[in-house]
Image (spheres, rainbow, N blue to C red):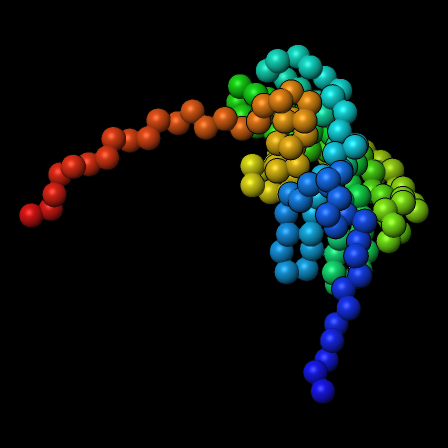
Length: 146
């Protein structure tokens, strides 16, 4: 007799409101597109608030992290400050919010969950990606090893 596993649908599954920004063997992370708010528009400096929702398969808990992203477009850097944590029920309704006192501001790696969420938030606000890749490719070598 073959075993069967049932996978319960979560509120972020196939919902355009949630854009996946990371996943690994134990978690999935999404940026909540409805949470994105431009706070500061002062090029090259920007601040955007957005919530990143992470589902942890080891605990079966969905948590939201309300972040403030600090952008320096010229330097191509993003920093994140997590303002609060939200806990969700299986329908996506917040059941608890924990405000973090004195939240730290930390640099984000471009390819991290927060880096990808920040890029999505920036695109949503300003219709362009934050990270630009204006690097010149070196000319290909036509020299043969003989």
